[in-house]
Amino acid sequence: MTVSNLDAFLDKLQEEIFDEAKQALGERGFDRWRNPKYNGRMENPDGWGRVTGECGDTMEIYLKFKDNRVADASYFTDGCASSMVSGSFAAELTLGKTPEELTDITADQILEAIGRLPDDDLHCTTLAARTIQAALDNYMGTMVKKG
Image (tube, rainbow, N blue to C red; front, side):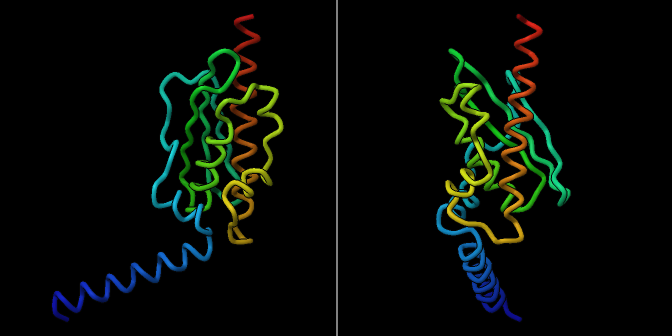
């Protein structure tokens, strides 16, 4: 196989992978997968949580508060594209929220923000919602100790 044939093959393969990902994740999910936001571990968060889902994916959510609202958030996951996209949208949904408002964030809201996920990956939104609650629990526990 010549280099130009290999390049053409790889371009076609990449296009097929992207088409499949767009079908699975929808437009917003695909865009976020290609251009992740809020990704990475945060230094000195006010609250953070780590949850491992039944699928084996582990997600972490980090929250920084200012004036009783989430001023900054990030996530980290060792999971699949659906976990990554769910963590990204979950972190985004926390921004500007009070601790009380964070308790209202559900897997359904995360899925609505994404648009769609494959049925087999819907649990990723539940994992993200549970991880937000773990981060909130950690923050509230810290606040009680400071109290």
